[in-house]
Image (cartoon, one colour):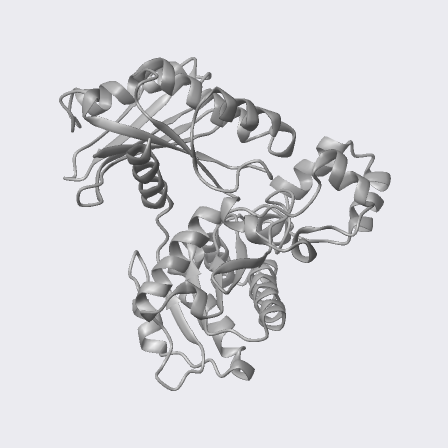
Length: 401
């Protein structure tokens, strides 16, 4: 079966087409600037590619462009849309309603819509994508929602509750939900394969490090804790997000600067993290280039990230009473060797030892183990593949329908 995987944003639509017989990527693309001017970029697995400006006033029009790209022209990979057996959608926030992937129907759509307040930038866009997809492909093609926080649903209350008045949890669902769950689920399962043992038989910490970052503690095969909270803002510093800060610091600045709630949210989500501290960029590669030119704030930002990652890892080791394996994934986790070296060389109390030469080799999609035979904790680099996991869930649910 061929599965189409969709990740719809407010003004974008990313897709991948995967042949599940061999789990082979056939084509991928992105529709950008939907409702503005529009741009389509497409590539096929054999190297063919195209990029063109095309007006897309809605997600429905974007799906029509996806249809054309898949079945006609330079990057054609299908003779007909009938070859697509099912469609999987990434949905960021499933709240407490959805603790696993589900086939989409009107009740599911209503449930996702009811959670708009918890993910105002994401869930409405996902609904647009789902509705547009049904409009183009019809209601007979199975569509599946895969929720970004579902993997974290097993967290115990002592992990997910905030120490706020309990009534706000009851009234508004204010609690820790966690995100990047699809990535954490994929790399944890892959780590279990590499260790040749069930996930339930070892303690694991997975580090998804990129422009958005989160760390998850997995014990007895279930998530014990994760660093992101009610929203993806919580945790440690990221590309433009501040991560956890003293709430009073935000209240203080709101008073001093006269910020509205939206302005405060914009500062914390879009102007902080790497960008805010360095004043240079949200991209780790740009910071490294600035450091080579003597930029001390860029160096400070990178040092802060390394310290905060180590601190979260240490807290999760305490929470699980140990750790057997550590995984790095995400754009920074997969490609930034000096970050991995810094973190691992400061975990000597855990008996972590890594092969520096192997560390240098593991980048640009390479998978492998960093740790030496003497290391008491196994350390891996595992490139994430959220789209493949979404496709696997979609295939399983479509077959069971």
